[in-house]
Every structure is written in C-alpha cells, then in structure tokens.
Length: 192
Image (cartoon, rainbow, N blue to C red):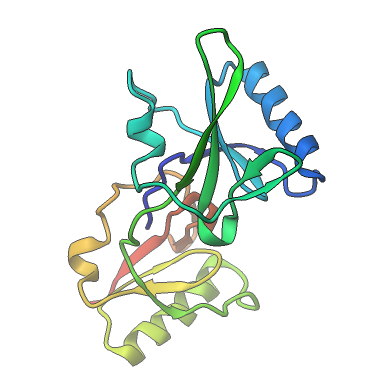
C-alpha cells in the first residue's frame, strides 16, 4: 500500500515517556539486536533490513522533513505526519543524531473510500463492507486494511507498486483478508 523508508519497527514505545526514556529504550533494544541505525517517532522505533553501504539511501528515500519535535535535547518524529528522527552509530560505535526524515512515499491505492471501519469486525465483514463502498463509487479494484477501504482511479496499475506483502491476515475458510496500516499493506480484491 505504501512504501516505508524504515519499514520494520523493533519496539513499541508510545507508552514510554518522557522522550529521554523512549530514546534510552530504543537505544537499548537496538544495541541488543545489533541495529546500527534507527528512526524514532512518538509511538515506535524503526529500522530496516536493507541497509547498504550508504544507509542514507534508505532513510532519505523520501527526503528530509521539518516536522520532528525536540524535547530535552532529543528529537523524535511524529507518527501522524509519518516522520522519523534518525539516529546512527558512528565509527566509535556511539549513537549520533542524523536528522528528521519522511518515512513514507505515495500510496499505491491513494483514495480512502471509507476510513471509518472500526466497528466492522472480521475479514469477511470487512470484505462485504468495502466491496459495497467500492461498487457504489464505481471501483473495480479495492484494498482493505485495519483502518480503511482503499482504491483509486488507477488502482489496477498501482496496487502492486511496492510488491506483494506476506503480512496480511487471511481467513482460511473464505480466503478474505486484510492488511495492517502500521505495516503499510492492504489485502487487494478485484471485482468481476
């Protein structure tokens, strides 16, 4: 559904306050797991499995941002604006502040045809609900995650822009599924 620069969260840290304790928790977990670069927002600590010889190619994939906040000498991104403040280990193996960056690119299915589905429970109910919304708007292809029903005028051309996900939840009996917004994936349906 969307491409993330740092696509793997390794710590849920939204309940850790204040910022210096959240940063310390991210650093501790990163050190335990051998992570050399992470981004922090107000809810999670993020990293990637795809660091190459130039890590800037990963975290700077969508450019820098001015939407991070600073408190107590530390900075953090904001999940609502998809920003991360990036920290990286230097040659002395010490954590250094890098900067504020966007963590997502354009959506593959850019139109939320219903973003109020919190009362719709289960993949089969989500399928029926989003199918009705898609048909009412004339869409032949739509996607479902745990937050919304998605489509777009060029959905047939863009739905697979970021590849196939292995993180969707699928009901074995019916084959209906849904993605998770936090993972940036949707389960896609094609109407006949």
